[in-house]
Image (cartoon, rainbow, N blue to C red; front, side, top):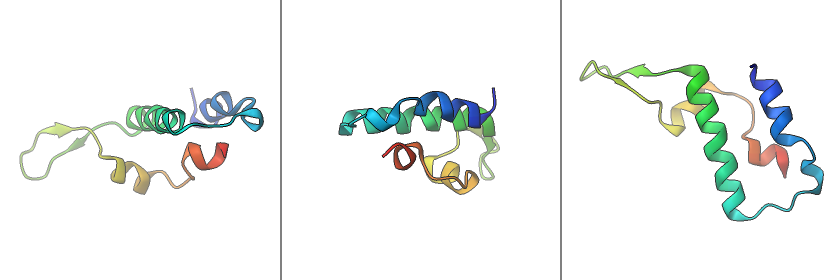
Length: 72
């Protein structure tokens, strides 16, 4: 499933939404989960172990605005 399609599904009907802080957080969590699946893990240079990407790293890799900004 490509990311544009996923974004379209999440945005369906968003012009009628009024987001609470809880819903904004849940949208960000969902988007980060999808991006982590798309970009995969990263090997830590110090320990050599695989780890999840941090939110800042995801933002650097993904150039589009976050889902909450698009929905608002």
